[in-house]
Image (cartoon, rainbow, N blue to C red; front, side):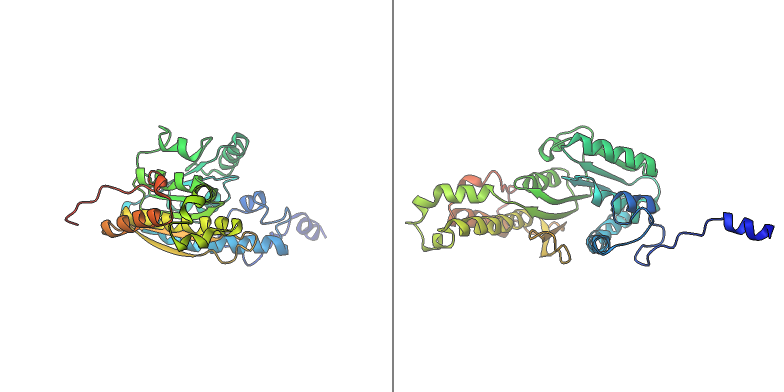
Length: 294
């Protein structure tokens, strides 16, 4: 009888859903509302976890590539929000790598930065830092290293994606992972110049109507971004972030520095800017000086 009473006092080990990977932080998954407080998955959280793994599958090979080359990896996540992505990457990859690797979350909202800092301390994620900066401010911040291996920007709104590209170029990043969002700047310039351009080329019919201006502006923005990256020697892949059903903005741009020839994409970029009446945006989509002998 005494032995039976003792057995009743010992809590049974918590059974986790099979989707949870070995070694994952249960506390983190609960903080991210992927697991319920009693360690369960409902339909919504199961979908979230599937999305997490899907995105991780894109980024993990890049982390491994840098780790194999350098022994450690640095990653900056722009527009981090609650640092959902940074925490998952740290939990699934970085924490098993030991000291040396570091993930930085860049977010303008100080209350989110404070919460992320507190959570990282509580979980013992010592290789994580969070800075209350805009993407543009982070480029010149002395709180970040002079070089960064990987730059991510998921749903960084409007020009924040371009600022993240500028940051990555200046920090000599080997890899970039971008999911652009709300590209309004180019559409604004197209709209402003529409009256004079419509007489110049029949192509302006593509964005003559307001709804087409918005959609074409979004499309051409990402085309220009890809050409800009190629003009800086990057190999660019554009795909769809399948599984993120909650957002229509799920175009995924992955860029890896390969020191590729720059002249042709630079020329193409300037040709496209001129053809669609966006010459004034050359400073936004800047290219390097290209040797004529290339």
